[in-house]
Image (tube, rainbow, N blue to C red; front, side, top):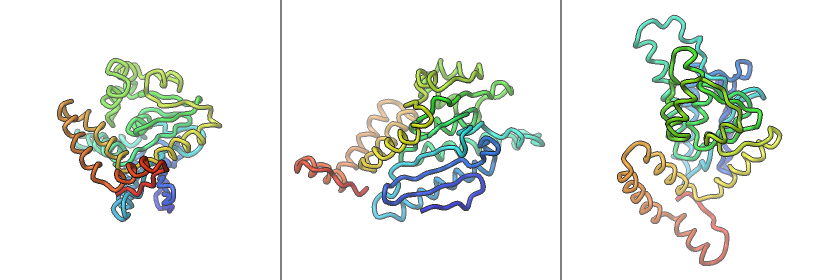
Amino acid sequence: MSENEFDTVTWSFDDESGIGRVTLDRPEAMNAIDERMQREVIEVFERFEELDREADGVAVSVVVMEGAGEKAFSSGLDLNEMEGLETHDDRKLIPDLFCEATDAIESYDAPVIAKVDGLCLGGGFEFAIACDFRYASERSTFGQPEVNFGLLPGGGAAQRLSTIIGVSNAKELCMTGKQIGAEEALEYGALNEVHPAEDLDEAVEEFAETLAGQPPLALRGIKDATNMTRQVGYEEALEYGGHIWVSLSQTEDFAEGMAAFAEDREPEYVGK
């Protein structure tokens, strides 16, 4: 299934593999994130949710998010849209909407992989770190330059980065506004893997197919439990995970996994 009715993003879904795709599609503007793109990213993930609701089981196993063109995943928020906004309430609409967009990525039930090739700055980096995994080409560049405009990242980057690369490293990136290459971002722990640009597609596809071959309800349970750890206390998160474990133990996929193990064969998961 492919739907290209949006102006700033494209999306598709392969019902055979269970892999969905989202592309930030403003290459002429280095995929800068304007208001329309934010709203369309939110709507795209709502479309994926609709596919799940309509499916007999789980439709979407994993989503890959990337930028159009060969120069940027995204160069960041389109700051031109701040012109003419005078009041506190008017300006507050900007971080409110962007937080809604990053949350749409982070809170979507299935895992999301960011495929980064080129610039990944400001709001673009915020989109990437809202994903569950980040694969990048060696020529990619990362950073949070908002401090250079007298701002902090508006989509929660300072907060999310602190849980990914540690509080001190997050402060360093956000307070200095410095740009770092892919290898340094990997050393920080901001990336999962770095590849030559010509090998990036294959690496991401291999990882996406690996995830798509796993029991989808278990993937969603793991994502839910790990995300919850950042929202509540550790003991509460452990208790929450226990409830997820019990729910998963009652699924058809669990029974299939146990049977496949006993019969020494490959399991066939159905997301139920």
